[in-house]
Amino acid sequence: MGMTSLLEIRGLHVGFKIFDGLLKVLAGVELAIGEGERVGLVGETGCGKTTTVKSVLRVLPIPPARLDGGEILYRAQDILKMKPREVRHLRRTELTAIFQDPLQALNPVFTVGTQLRDIVLDSLAAAGQRLTRKEITARCVQALAETGMPDPERIMSNYPIQLSGGMRQRVCIAEALIKSAKLLLADEPTTNLDVTIQDQILRKLDELVEEKGMSVLMITHSLGVVMDLTERVYIMYAGTIVEEGRTEELFARPLHPYTQGLMKSVPKLTGEGISKGIAGRIPNYLEPPSGCRFHPRCEHAMPICEEERPPLFSTGVNRRVACFLYQRS
Ligand SMILES: Nc1ncnc2c1ncn2[C@@H]1O[C@H](COP(=O)(O)OP(=O)(O)OP(=O)(O)O)[C@@H](O)[C@H]1O
Ligand code: SF4
Ligand SMILES: [Mg+2]
Image (cartoon, rainbow, N blue to C red):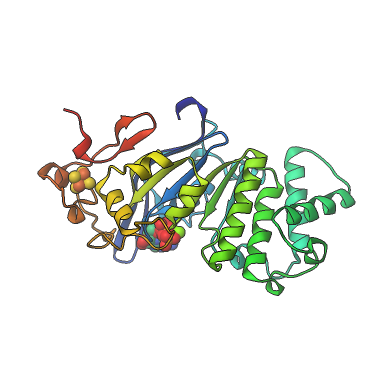
């Protein structure tokens, strides 16, 4: 990615201070997203995907969260070093997110129309622009219509609680896309919906993102979604990136033992749950395994794996894997 990266996470360490001690969750996450690129982030539950997204948005609760190092460069500027005002500006203009639970993201006491208008007003103010009330309303209705929402004019005067789960998630998508942001962080945006709706919504989202030339980080448990909707993918295990590559290539030839187990456990890439085929569990973050965090579960583990942390070894263009099996001596 290098020079053309819109977002670049370097060596990100995040912990959570709890009663029993420090959960060392993110341990040196490395991830980049280029302009207009659609990137996937995959890993089993608890591996740190949401923590990564929340770090980028600077919405981690500190404490209990604790930043223990690293950089998050957005257009070469470190988000972690920005003043709260600058971060807010970024979120009003360039950065946007969709989370798993739309009810939590939407305000129950305001109508859909009020919430959408507020976002438009806010982003106009941030850009130093003005529109008439009529123009703003038209833009909101259009944004809803674009998500495939039936009867968008009527929905404008509804409260979130009056809508179905799928409709609420469409509202969240409209909210995320209405401010013409550059980078969308989509954190399992359809997990709570039923499967047919999930598929419709993801496809719509993908269409809109493509149309607007946005960059996307798509977080999901579903390998099928990643396969269909991303160009490049990162595999995460226990707070570390274990492998990255072009999606098609990585799926055709997974290199990391964890990724190989993942793929074996989902033979047809149907998008169902992952990691059924790998023995053992994600480690305890209070005392994570030394060296390679996967070593207690790895059938190829060597003495060095317990002692040293494998860096990401490059095995080709856009292809890296954090495993000593690929170290060229
Ligand atoms: N507020 C918090 N306080 C304490 N620990 C936390 C907190 N948030 C996250 N964690 C810890 O960080 C780990 C990673 O959580 P995170 O939500 O980032 O995982 P995830 O990959 O998004 O999982 P999922 O697929 O279930 O959404 C969890 O196992 C949990 O132990
Ligand atoms: S570094 Fe060692 S333990 Fe880790 S995945 Fe590779 S072989 Fe297995
Ligand atoms: Mg999550």
